[in-house]
Amino acid sequence: EPEVTQTPSHQVTQMGQEVILRCVPISNHLYFYWYRQILGQKVEFLVSFYNNEISEKSEIFDDQFSVERPDGSNFTLKIRSTKLEDSAMYFCASSGTSRDTQYFGPGTRLTVL
Amino acid sequence: GENVEQHPSTLSVQEGDSAVIKCTYSDSASNYFPWYKQELGKGPQLIIDIRSNVGEKKDQRIAVTLNKTAKHFSLHITETQPEDSAVYFCAAKDNFNKFYFGSGTKLNVKP
Image (cartoon, rainbow over all chains, first blue to last red; front, side):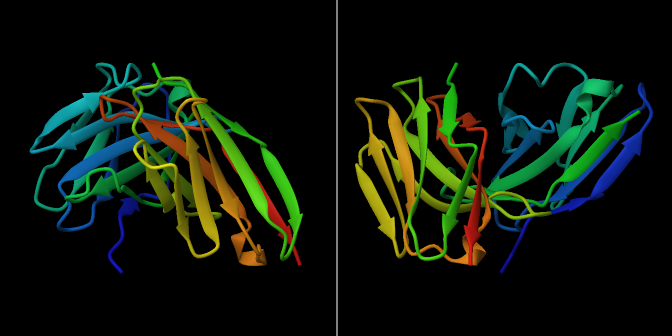
């Protein structure tokens, strides 16, 4: 069964550094998403991406965040200058023609020191 | 914006019993309500969903009910098994295609 994959599973970085989280969505999917979950808190929507552009974003998704689909398979989330409060689990998801049915990856745990 | 509340935060049941998890939402325009199961080390997995034009949906041992007037929806698991043990999340999608999640329920099914 096809699945969403994410790398790395755990990323440790110093405050102020840039990080790129990588996702490979399911191959024929059209919509791509990033969510984050701070430890002990709710899963929060960050951004959705369709047809090579952002379709929706939350207030969390400020100028320090960016997303890209650099080729036909990868979908990345870049955090430009990490802060301690960016420490969280980041989930990528994708959906196909049934846009609402989202398939989640296993997540990347980001730790900012 | 939308706010989804989920109860209880933990639920312990005996194998074979039923489990019910409840969520409320605030935005009456929300129109799609999925439920996810998250096992340790994995991402959320969609297990059942319901749209705002339907009151109930069932899939084998799992059912979801929606009360639009009261703005709440519930997940029902019957004949629980140890492999049902996981964290369950409800979510609501608003008119802007943004998803809002509940805080999760840790279900423990005791053999």
